[in-house]
Length: 75
Image (cartoon, rainbow, N blue to C red; front, side, top):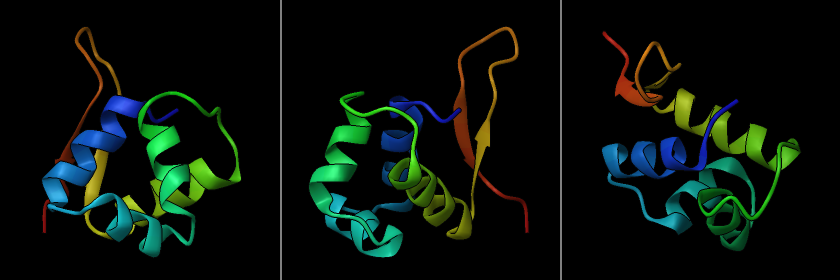
C-alpha cells in the first residue's frame, strides 16, 4: 500500500502541484489532499493516484528495514 508520505514525496519529485496530480489521476484536487493527509483509505481514487504517479516514471519503494520511499525509474 502506498503511504501518504510517498504520495507527497512522489509529487515533489515530479514537481507537480496538487492540481497536476489530480488532473492526471482523474480525481478532484481535494481527493489528492485527503490522500496526502491520511484522511482517506485505500480505494479507487488512491489507486488512480498511484497509477498516475507510476505512469509518470516514479517507483514506490517498500520498506526494507527503513522507511518506504520513492525514486525515479531507471531508463
